[in-house]
Length: 117
Image (cartoon, rainbow, N blue to C red; front, side, top):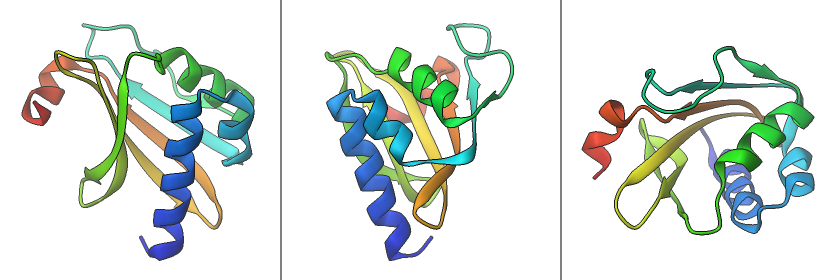
């Protein structure tokens, strides 16, 4: 990931913090896909979600005003971490293609999030 990608991740995080579905959509590539993993323990989409409208909707359902959102290193690249007062509830890894996010991987499985505590 190069510097331009970092800027896209930060704009994505800002749009998520604002809770603006339109702002999130504007940063998603036309062919964007979101894949989530709840590990059977928390609600998550069973199949990949495709398209900016559907992915923005999926993200908007995840984003809650009481959650703190930070940009942190996820697998060595900037990603988005969502925390409640008690624990990490989601970690998002992003693939950036040009000026847009083309893939969003969302880890919701509490077992996989333990090391983020």
